Length: 291
Image (cartoon, rainbow, N blue to C red):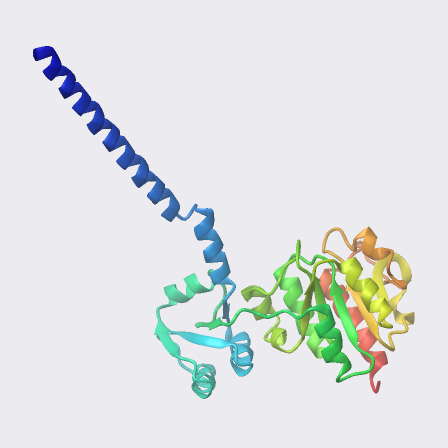
């Protein structure tokens, strides 16, 4: 009898210990899934971050294009720029919320937000066919810029800003291994992202072949190319700007109708991607006036 009672007590103790262990394991799993290290949580946070833009110019352009969902303003902000944003938001029926600076720091991922963050509808890229078709409706001889795996959002934003100023009709980027439209790109472009159509494609080599079939001349950059000042940039053209470090991929380089170079006499034998792109875009702009 004593032995049987002892065994029952031991079994009861083991069962209780097992239940406690299961409860702790369940609690640990729940804690792990809700932590900042969870890949699921990080994916959600990353996707949310891309739905916010910040800074005055970027917010104004997005609001005017009807992409604003909610405008967050720093609670102690005043001045003409703030009043302008409030008025545009009112016209677009976009709600305005006054929040502490710390909230804007979080929403902008600690970017230079100027007391302004706008929740927006995610950017909608065009397909290459859509870009060609909608451009051809307005212009017989389009000018496109192809970015071969540009990774720095500041470079991408600067290129978009210059593209808008120099009359580029569209920008083509790859879906993978390249920066897309992010809050930093939008702010650096000072709103140009809302005015320059952007197509995103799976394969730049195939996209280039498709452009050539449509009658485009495609130009790239290379240290051994011809002087860009002799470049005939008239007609339907596409200009390829290579990656910041690696330059243009070998597969894409084979598709070029001509390679261009920017002469340099200093000790540094390369230019920032956005600077080189700017020089080439304006060289084309100077020739294409009146087309």
